[in-house]
Length: 408
Figure 1 (cartoon, rainbow, N blue to C red):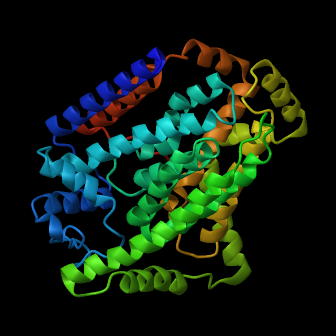
Figure 2 (figure 1 turned 90 degrees about the vertical axis):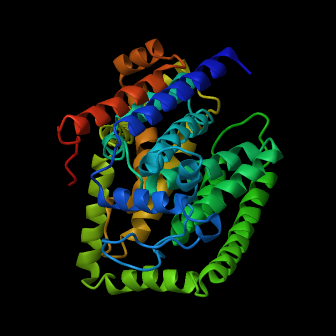
């Protein structure tokens, strides 16, 4: 274990400890309605028998009543467990969201390091915290950050399994986690793991790693998702006497069908523009640098920078571009087919574009690269996280409206 890794881990633990203490001390509650609902569900589960955690209900006074079957309970379980261990129940969901943020940052750095130079990957640890989407979701209790962590874990497991078969377990855990957190939306996980392996073919590795175990991890993960779904249904029926998946799927697919692309081609084009506008704004200004890097004249600058600050793989730029395009095409392509629009539906796209655009910015803007080299310290990302987290808490505490970016 290197001294740098130890310092980074210790810094993150300290930052999280301060964050958790602050959340509890000021009795934080988000303004976002979904976050308040999910935080309350987790808090109510914590005082209920664990055998009934699989079947929570809507708290009194919300827009629905009865059984909560909007999603599986994967998001609520860690927060309920934390509250059951003694952490303030009303803030447990926000505390777990802080853990998901930290894990997402660490996994992003690890994944980026397989495609970009070391300083570029490490700089993403603080750059992605300064994107508009990071400010909007700084302290929440909803699904998006947990979903991102599960997806990144599956991707990192897929990458590492190419050389170390034991990481197949991480791929499986990430894919199963996606199912338990977001249900139907977990189908994006295996597709993106496959896209990651295809992108890996664009890298020039010497010697080239074998993808056999990585493919096995994806296949086993899909099988595990199916078995988990069956087990979940059995447990839910044991607890309630009612089905879960048939109700959940009819609601998810039914709403999508009712709100489906009724306005034809014009409606489809509008949806695509609507989502692409979000892709341009929420990872801004990284999205701009990514577009600039696509121009032929700018690509020459990127190639020159790559020689000076060589990435582990000569084809890392091509692989990163392919994977980012795959994430964008998959999410925007699927959700663009329905008029059921929401910023959060394509949440992973913002971080994929933000990370790719962040690397492009470092290669195109020499002053930013010089700053990244000065800030290339293990404690910098945790420090940025702590400062921005504290700023969010203080803004809410003194009555200043939480920084809310305009959504196009």
